[in-house]
Length: 222
Image 1 (tube, rainbow, N blue to C red):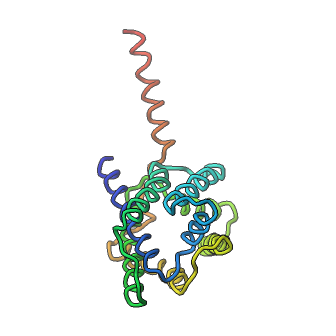
Image 2: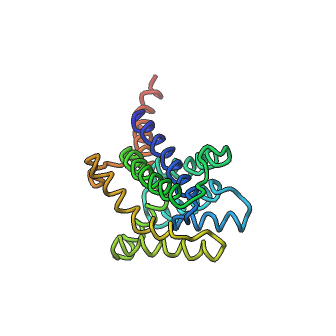
């Protein structure tokens, strides 16, 4: 379990680094980040706080739709946003000032997001809020994963744009390329998502309840 938690937090930190790289590439944001930035303009909070707020709402929706939540889901919801603010507010990653450096930062960011996905998903502690919504809606509607994922991201993109989020050539590139890059990373590490056995919060609650019920009679006897 300790190894799982270390792997999870390494993945979450790398995910935040990858996202900030794509943001600071200054070529346009990924669909969800367009939405987060729109919320920033609307409310005045930070990008990290916007990410956390959206994550909380999505976890609640996922649970209402019957999707199981893991500790990794909660960690994803909270710590990616915290790590993003840590990096951005301390200016740990520079902002690109030209097209070439922007493209390098953007592709490096997507590559790091792919590696981060390998670590955090491989921890087997549940999917992130956005992936969980995709899975829940796929189950409920019986539509394809591609259709549901595209519908969610297009919706986030449109709403974020209407709120003032930044759309550019990078938005288009990331919308097309990110999935292929993540798939390449998984093949590189010989990682099969279907083989991951996730441990969910209700598993731990059930384990503790059963252990408590087993030990309670003996304690009373003593």
